[in-house]
Length: 507
Image: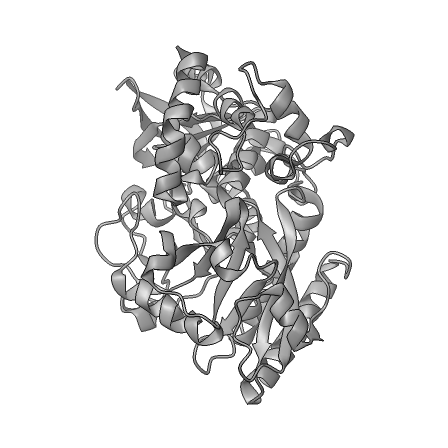
């Protein structure tokens, strides 16, 4: 079993300080960095990944939790990104992480008009990409028209006024983006990669870096034949020649009961747009996410971005015309915001309009000293970004490696287990075929008891986060191994129990 823990971290640091050079050093523990580490490790390379905080501490945990087929990019005429998105979605849902991604029904209310007709045509074009990627109808059904009654049954809070029915389509939904990152890192470790969180990289070049263990303060130099900078919006701190223009995307968190416990997502167009939507997405733990925005975020980059008040107003104003009973601020139980690492290779401006035109295409560049920078793109296409980054790094050396195999490499938990039967459905959603192992590994009493009443996360998951998933403290568990922390009142309720478990396991 691929394991990350405080012990495996110490052993990985011992390997780094041994003086033996690495084939590849990856800096950054988000989805791209973890993807690079897995790609390189499965090619037989000696790999280490270092992250200054925790896995998925940055942008990777703040997404909409959707694995998109690229409809928006198709509508803007960016066929290459749309096609790439559909292909990568196929790999994720059929081979890489089918246990973490489920089909999500999405409904666009039909109240008549030219806008709805154009959107329907766009959905059909997107479905062509889905078929070309090889994703079967049984996994992602083609778009279809549904009645007003079915629209209301799927999303009870939608306004019936003028409702003629709906357009139903489907996309992929991650149970949790942070769990995808952890699964990638653990799978990479299973193939031999050294994964070290709480390790800061400085003085980085194409042949190594100075590293500091932030838990002990010890610093040391590490040599590598290749180095990949996968630090996203923080990439400019590694290579100040990069022109990174962060764009902030904000979501609201609402209790699912407030919207009638929808079992489909609501997509409502922004104004007269046929390519930009506000999504209202049912999620785990009895929550619904409303998002998202796309605004410029100049200035210093915070560890935890915060939404602007105007973004909250924008989302409420955008979604309320579609609802029978409008949301207000009292309905918001949490918010989260992430910074997209957009790269302007044309030297454009920093205003919101310019940022909207910056391509979501990922950027892989090699600095003169061999340092490989990879950033931009989107969560759905992380695997392709990782493949391109490793290919670019290999081109800077005479090192030989195997072919990329990540399109068919399953992550931990992807292979189903007959022992999943009888376990809580939420546990299986988050761990797939590993769910029985989560329970088997528990040593404390009441492994299937909720961590606190009303929160559908078990005590066994808390233990597993520490013993197998590299969590080092309560914040790692609240905010990244689970998403309890998205709602502060839930985090406050669960923290004492989590800290008690940590104390029992780690002394």
